Image (cartoon, rainbow, N blue to C red; front, side, top):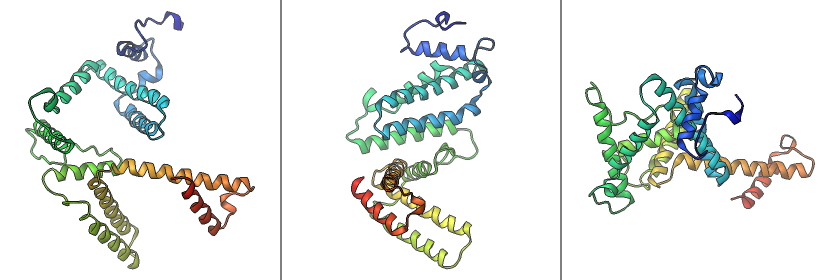
Length: 275
């Protein structure tokens, strides 16, 4: 069917139009073979990828790309909702109703009579509401944990921060950032000792994991998102390394044929040039 005859009505800015496009893509006879073949499991990796691409556009300050990437992420939501609608389990309207209800419940200081004086108090209130909802979802189960429903598919750094944040709601936490520093020093010491002892790789990995977990804890106490901090450092490293490559290329050289002292000097130069 020619595009001019495509039976979609309404503005291209309309959610309704987007839902119609998605339904057409999944149409059993006239739809796209690839889209019809997909299920929740096959689409999930794309959903994760699109979320990362949104974060990347934000980190680069590229608002034009952000519009495009947010659209891709929204399409993932619509895709999952369409598949669920075909199964008769839920639809896009249910997704919207769920998030609207959740936002109203978790913001009683905006939509109700509760008083919240600052951001910290709001964060505590938010976590309390989430805890009550988790408890309600878990009612009837034999075992319940405060750490239930922290997705295992999250990036390790992000999941570590969420686990720590959950534990902190019941006081299982260091009182301040300064008190995390001795823990960092302890973990470094244990890793160094394991290296000196010639410990096997599995032992070294365990000690390194403990150190990384403590680093995430330190970031949380500084109110820094550890995942974004590391992403920013990755970008900084990449920019500085590319600076070295460009500098060498101007002289007809490459990284592979340059001695370590020269590379170190260029790295220092890159650090001065790129913050």
